[in-house]
Amino acid sequence: MPQGTQTPPQDPIHQHDRGLPQLLAIMRRLRDPETGCPWDVEQTFATIAPYTIEEAYEVADAIERNAMDELQGELGDLLLQVVFHAQIAEEAGHFSFVDVADEVATKMISRHPHVFGDESRDKSADQQTRDWEKVKAAERAAKGATGVLDDVAVGLPALLRALKLQKRAARVGFDWPSTDQVLAKIQEEAAELVEARDTLGPDEIEEEMGDLLFVMANLSRHMGVDPEAALRRANAKFTRRFGAIETALKQRGKTPEQSNLEEMDALWDAAKAAEKAAKRAATAPPADPGTKA
Image 1: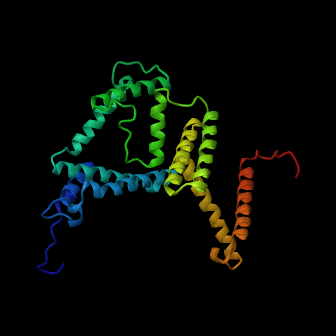
Image 2: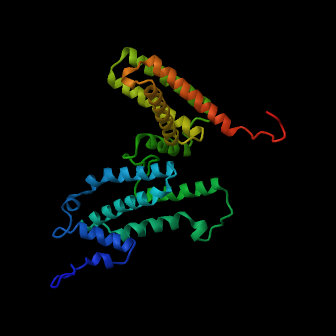
Image 3: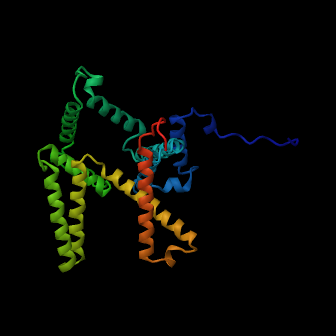
């Protein structure tokens, strides 16, 4: 080191206790009006909310892809969103991060008396679910939410909210007894959508499409299928098969724009057949080593 030079002082944040204490300290520094980051200082609950939703989806995406090497970072990004909102709230005098943690801890203890209280753990999963709902109903009543659907968050993705509304209504007996009635309702709603397409305007078409999607979510619930997971799977399948179309066209010296529907449809069918054949081969029982080919 040249004579007369000095090592720049290291920021105290580097000596802070690691983990959550350091993260909370970082956010306080970022939000400091005098010395913080101008972008972070300007943020509000509303401007940060879209990032919170995005980070939650990225966590779900990493789990869906079984990308454990990415999940740690994505969970950290989601935790940062909680810390960010809590810091904004503390500055406004609403609550702190400790208050957030205390409230959810109290809630978990209250909702698990068979673990943290004197209730027996010797009960079925169905009974535990019913007990859980009783506790949550009492919590809703304490908040003044007396209606069955009062506290189903409006800001949820529409498909998820539809599922939650249906589950909540089903708990009080407002539900079809079997999938037969749900399937009949789908046929009814599909017919009404066709009628709207042929005789009505865009607003009515949108309404009927919403009704059909709502019943489809209900069918998923009745059949024990997570509609979000099912749709993600269908999206992945479409992406995979369309990629096969692009690959086949490239081998022919073409792009999709240079092709036509008939050719691409035939390539789609070929990709579909290849996937099914591969799936059958993967699930077929192993050949008896004593037999000859």
